[in-house]
Length: 433
Ligand code: LLP
Image (tube, rainbow, N blue to C red; front, side, top):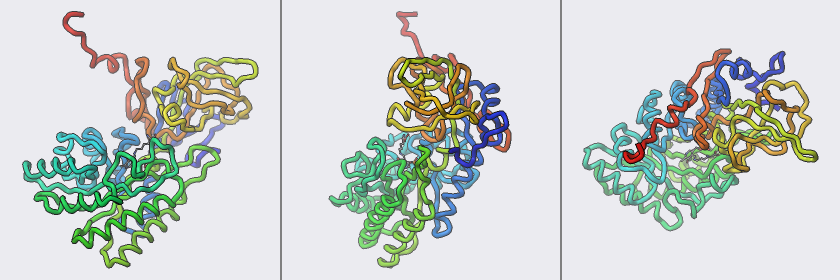
């Protein structure tokens, strides 16, 4: 079943953003990432509406999902803030027109250089450890700028997701432990620091979570800390619950019920605010995948096919774990179809391989597809998040190009890498010249 923003035309070709994907590949080549601008906007508005109807809320787009400048620009024009996790993401967000005041800087390792840039632009720093707090305090003092800080706490919530992308458990590397009192201690220390202004609290329990309950548990635990802080005389501007809202990847998976999620999370927050006589906090979320994941597809050419009696048919695409690493890294499922044979029956058991010289390089195993022939076009769905942003150049393959489509128009938003791009940073030592 295709998601509602796709169509199929009379030729049986997949249509995205009003554009025939087969024609896109003729014009721009393969492998090709395609981002549907309208879908990004719809996702943003749906998320904002669900929470915004109930609360003052800010969405800080997590650039790590897809930091392409055009993608970030689309969200900037919607009014989004940004969650950045490196100096360069911060620069990309600024370049796209997102002001520093609407950004949060996350991560367990922010270098002094990165922190200086954040301070210069008034970016809120979500502090991850005591040493980082000291560094920020020192830099703020030295530069005479006030640091806006918030603390990432570890709420010890188990998120039902892949262990590599679960972050809220006590044993994870992130944030300040709540149980042992570390989190409160961090706030106490910051309170005594000149040039440091405490503005919020932050947590992120993991990614690709489809069930609202862990978010409700997170909200409860975070609000408990907020209430304790109040007793210490520390009042916050915002409560940042991070990202993590998932999308359906498998045909049988259901969409997250955003209305239910918003209702339950907001009522949890409001209950604690009411009970403890607190003011209303600005709610912050850092969605990445939810905003851009299903807005992106990857188009790849079927180059060769192989038949072995009694085994699924192998097809080799010109994109594999170099272009999209999620299947190899997490065993992630991405739905695959043939973009030029959308009207044919899916009757052939097929293994979908990439072009690299390792067995882990596949995009799907045992999939039902129409019988694929050399020259056909495969489409891999739901790759707008953590697709191009995690791609690599293994075996010196150039990274794919990316186009953005909107109302029947297409524009290149990232050019395909070239031999020159791949080699321009290499140097020979003098003795080998
Ligand atoms: N905020 C923080 C602090 C994060 O660490 C992340 C993601 C997000 C927000 C955005 O999460 P999202 O809404 O996209 O779930 N590479 C993995 C996902 C890693 C997510 C890391 N942190 C994947 O391909 O599934």
